[in-house]
Amino acid sequence: PPPEAISVPLTDDDFESEAQRSAILDPWRVTDAEGRVLPAWLDSIKVFEGKGRLSAHARDLIATPVSGGVA
Image (cartoon, rainbow, N blue to C red):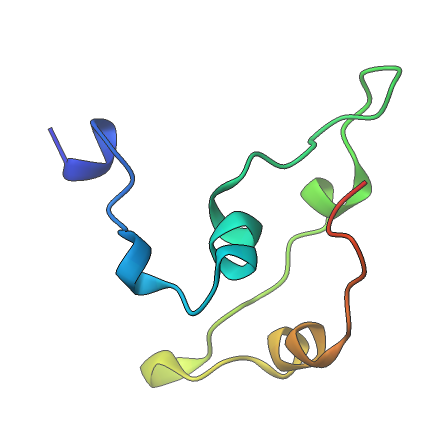
């Protein structure tokens, strides 16, 4: 089986801070209180262009400040 089947293939050394680690590894809410899938999970975006370059949309998301993560 692939390594991620047993554990997350990241270590604490892969992150600059505990906040960054938590933002990536902590569980994210997928549904609202009524069980409906949240729009963010239904509206996918193209993250990478050719040769591993970030897409313009992904760059915009990275540049947008987030307060408190996902509700």
